[in-house]
Length: 473
Length: 76
Image (cartoon, rainbow over the protein chains, first blue to last red):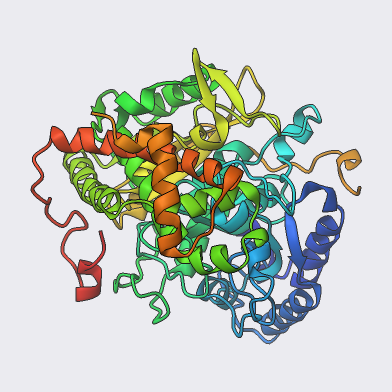
C-alpha cells in the first residue's frame, strides 16, 4: 500500500531517496503557517530553528547517513511542550512571568532525534482544561474541515485544538498533543485525523506543562495510522524527567504494522451507546462490521468513572494552580478560574473515592478485555459544532457541549489504556466523526493494527487546506 | 442520597467557610460561581458514591500486568 503523498511516511521516504529536500519541505510548511493567523491555531513559529534543522537533515543525507525515520517531516507541538528559549504558555496568561524553558521537552527531542523538524507551537484550551478548543486569550481555533465544507466556523475540539487543526489542514502531518480526559481524542475526531493516547506512563512527559499528573498523557495526532505509529516509536524511550514513566523497553510498532494480525474486537455498549448523532452511529456500525465486532460488552462503571475523572481533574488542577489563583486570579480566564478555585476546595473524601473508583473501573475493563483484544466506542456524540454553541440536542438529549463532547472519552481515561481514534466523513453532515479503539495496557501494537484495518476500510480523511478566503485576516 | 453540596445554599456556605482556609478570598458573584462549580462536582461525586454502594470494594489486581520494575508497579 502506497503512503499518501501528504503523509509523514511519504515525506520521509522522499527525503531518504533524495526526491525532495528537507529545506523545500520546511519552506512549504512555513509558507502555509504564515497564511493561517486567523485560525487561532498557532502560538509561535520556529522558522530559523526549522531551517537550521532542515539543513542538517539535507547535509546528513548528502553525506550518506540515514537521516532518520521521520527525516525532514515538519511537526508541531501543543504549547505545553517546552521549547528551549521560550516560555511555555499552556494557553494561559498565568504563565507569562515564567522563565523560558532551558531545554526542549523529551518528546520534542525524541521527534527531532528521529529526523522530524519542529515548526510551530499550537493553541490549546487554557491550561488544557477544556474540550471545546477555545481560549480566553487566543480565541477559538477554527476547524479546517468546517471551512472546507461550507465556510462555517466550527470548533476543533480540545484541548489539543491547534495541533488537530494543523494536521487536518495538511500543514504538518504530525502534531503532538496531550490527553487528560480526551484532549487528543476529541479534537482528532472533530478534525478528522488519527489520534493516539498511549498507555498511561508509556511516554515521558518530561518538559511538558502538567495539568493532572494522575491522568496526563502525551501522544501524537497524525495524518495516517502509519504516521501515528512512526511518531509513537520515536517518542518511546526512557527518561528520568517523568516520575511515573514505566520502565519498559521500547516496543516499536511501525515496522510490522502493515502485516500485523487484525485483533479481535467487541463494541462497548451501555454508556457508550447513547446519545449518538446518526453520522456517529453509522460510523460505529461500519467500524464494528469491518472488524467483525459482532458482540458487545458493557462497562457498568463508565458513568461513575466519568464522574471520578471530573473530580480528580478538578482537584488536582485546583491544587496545582492554587498559589497563582491566590496571588494573580486575574491571570486566568473566567471559566477556568472558577473551576480551578472550586477544585481547590473539594473535600478529600471525594477525591479518595474517585481514585478508588478508578481502580475498580480499570479492573472491570481488564475483565472485559480478557475475552477480546480491543473494544470500539464512539469518540464524541456528534460532529464538530459551530463555535459559540453551548447546547445541542443529540438523539433527543440536550448536551452541554463544553462538558459533554467528552462524554465517551472521559471515562476511559481513568483506565490508562491505549486508545487510538480514526475518523470517517459523516454522510449527512459532511463532517468527520471519530471512533475510539481501546486496547490492553501497553498493547499499542494491537490498537494501531485495528486502526490500520479501519483506515483501509475507509476510515481516513485526506487533509485539505481550506480555500484562501479563510486564510490571512 | 444526594450529596449535601448539591444544594445551592449548602454549597455556598461550604465555599464561604473553606475558601479562606486555603487562602482564597471569594465574595459576591465570585463566591456564587465557585459554589455552582462545587455543586456540579457534588453531582458527579454522587454518581461515584452510588457505584461504591453497589460494588465489592476489594482492590483489583494490577491491571497493567507483570511489572518490569518497581516504577511500573506504581502505575494505575
